Length: 99
Image 1 (cartoon, rainbow, N blue to C red):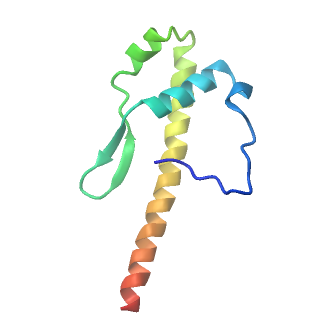
Image 2: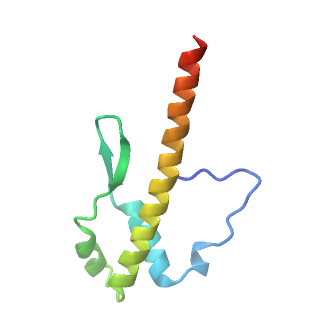
Image 3: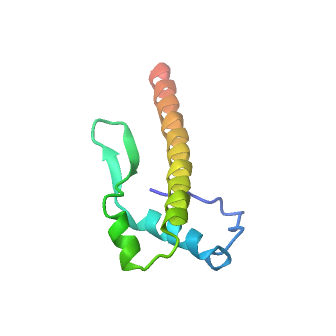
Protein backbone atom coordinates (compact mmCIF):
# COMPACT_ATOMS: atom_id res chain seq x y z
CA UNK A 1 0.00 0.00 0.00
CA UNK A 2 1.28 3.42 -0.81
CA UNK A 3 0.87 6.63 -2.64
CA UNK A 4 1.41 6.51 -6.36
CA UNK A 5 3.00 9.60 -7.83
CA UNK A 6 2.20 10.46 -11.45
CA UNK A 7 5.23 10.04 -13.68
CA UNK A 8 5.16 13.70 -14.68
CA UNK A 9 5.55 14.88 -11.10
CA UNK A 10 8.66 14.75 -8.99
CA UNK A 11 8.62 14.91 -5.19
CA UNK A 12 8.63 18.48 -3.92
CA UNK A 13 10.90 17.64 -1.00
CA UNK A 14 13.58 15.14 -0.29
CA UNK A 15 13.50 13.48 3.14
CA UNK A 16 16.76 15.29 3.94
CA UNK A 17 14.87 18.60 3.62
CA UNK A 18 12.54 17.64 6.47
CA UNK A 19 13.06 18.16 10.18
CA UNK A 20 14.41 15.27 12.21
CA UNK A 21 10.99 14.77 13.83
CA UNK A 22 9.33 14.60 10.40
CA UNK A 23 11.89 12.09 9.19
CA UNK A 24 11.25 9.90 12.24
CA UNK A 25 7.48 10.13 11.73
CA UNK A 26 7.74 8.99 8.10
CA UNK A 27 10.21 6.25 8.99
CA UNK A 28 7.97 4.92 11.77
CA UNK A 29 4.89 5.17 9.53
CA UNK A 30 6.60 2.90 7.02
CA UNK A 31 8.00 0.57 9.71
CA UNK A 32 4.86 0.02 11.80
CA UNK A 33 2.61 -2.85 10.73
CA UNK A 34 -0.74 -2.11 9.11
CA UNK A 35 -4.05 -3.03 10.71
CA UNK A 36 -6.30 -4.52 8.04
CA UNK A 37 -9.95 -5.48 8.51
CA UNK A 38 -10.46 -8.99 7.23
CA UNK A 39 -14.17 -8.40 6.62
CA UNK A 40 -13.61 -6.31 3.51
CA UNK A 41 -13.21 -2.83 4.97
CA UNK A 42 -9.51 -2.84 4.06
CA UNK A 43 -6.89 -0.69 5.73
CA UNK A 44 -7.83 0.48 9.21
CA UNK A 45 -4.63 2.08 10.51
CA UNK A 46 -1.24 1.34 12.03
CA UNK A 47 -0.44 -0.86 15.02
CA UNK A 48 1.31 1.54 17.39
CA UNK A 49 1.66 -0.94 20.28
CA UNK A 50 5.46 -0.99 19.98
CA UNK A 51 5.93 2.69 19.17
CA UNK A 52 7.18 3.73 22.63
CA UNK A 53 9.78 0.96 22.55
CA UNK A 54 10.92 1.92 19.04
CA UNK A 55 11.21 5.61 19.96
CA UNK A 56 13.28 4.70 23.00
CA UNK A 57 15.44 2.38 20.91
CA UNK A 58 16.15 5.19 18.43
CA UNK A 59 16.63 7.66 21.29
CA UNK A 60 14.05 10.07 19.86
CA UNK A 61 14.25 13.29 21.85
CA UNK A 62 10.90 14.93 21.01
CA UNK A 63 8.66 11.87 21.15
CA UNK A 64 5.46 13.90 21.49
CA UNK A 65 6.16 15.87 18.29
CA UNK A 66 7.09 12.70 16.38
CA UNK A 67 3.87 11.06 17.57
CA UNK A 68 1.80 14.07 16.45
CA UNK A 69 3.44 13.99 13.02
CA UNK A 70 2.94 10.23 12.79
CA UNK A 71 -0.77 10.72 13.50
CA UNK A 72 -0.88 13.26 10.66
CA UNK A 73 0.72 10.70 8.34
CA UNK A 74 -1.81 8.08 9.38
CA UNK A 75 -4.72 10.48 8.89
CA UNK A 76 -3.54 11.55 5.43
CA UNK A 77 -3.09 7.94 4.38
CA UNK A 78 -6.52 7.05 5.78
CA UNK A 79 -8.07 9.80 3.61
CA UNK A 80 -6.11 8.65 0.56
CA UNK A 81 -7.11 5.02 1.06
CA UNK A 82 -10.78 5.95 1.66
CA UNK A 83 -10.89 7.79 -1.67
CA UNK A 84 -9.35 4.81 -3.47
CA UNK A 85 -11.83 2.45 -1.80
CA UNK A 86 -14.78 4.70 -2.76
CA UNK A 87 -13.57 4.82 -6.37
CA UNK A 88 -13.26 1.03 -6.45
CA UNK A 89 -16.79 0.63 -5.06
CA UNK A 90 -18.17 3.07 -7.67
CA UNK A 91 -16.33 1.19 -10.41
CA UNK A 92 -17.73 -2.13 -9.20
CA UNK A 93 -21.28 -0.71 -9.11
CA UNK A 94 -20.85 0.77 -12.60
CA UNK A 95 -19.53 -2.53 -13.94
CA UNK A 96 -22.50 -4.35 -12.37
CA UNK A 97 -25.00 -2.03 -14.07
CA UNK A 98 -23.43 -2.69 -17.47
CA UNK A 99 -24.15 -6.42 -17.31
